[in-house]
Image 1 (cartoon, rainbow, N blue to C red):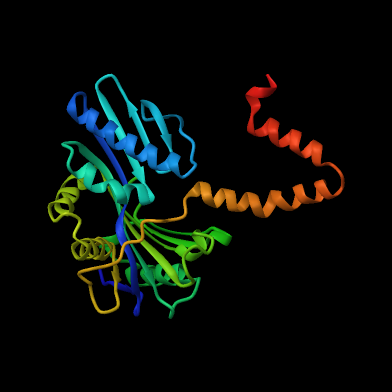
Image 2: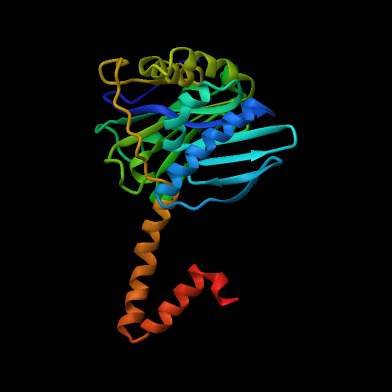
Length: 285
């Protein structure tokens, strides 16, 4: 299988860990995972995000923006995502736990490509690999999410090896600059443990992580190119717009004009009552 080249003049903006799912048996490991979860919870609540009861695959517990921690009678599960996963990845690496999934990402900016680039990459990939037995079992998919941009997927979502390229500028609603693309490698199940050991063994070295991501995509037929090769030091941006922040921005754009119109029409008291009942439902009981 030949490699389809993706990006030609890309500047690396970020590189890091974007997701971690870790489990441990009862005892010290569970307590250490709980300690990491407590730190994630504190960070989320300090940013104004709520903690709520959640469940995942039989684990019952709590979670919030970027984190979840739950327990079973004999084990515990910790899930971290986004900037929280990147911030606490070294803490997880110090725990003798089983990592069943982690995502590694590199964020690139290439002003030579347009918003439809994901479609171009996947079309080139399909044309290059058509009829080749070595990739008959590799699924690809292109998803156009409208305002959130397009995403090219390589490998089935349930497979141990999965990756994607998507328009980070569109997905972040403009938080990232135009022409910014995110390339994510999703490593699961039997591949996750050995790969996690390799990356933690070099203390998440940025150059090594970039090389790992390039190799992961190359295995699926995509050659990622970076400006000036693989740098040894790459600035990592830890402040990424969360899903909750995006929803709040959407709320401002959609609900705020309606509220303003109602207030201008003389319904300020009714609007206040409706909002109070929505935000404080227990008060009405």
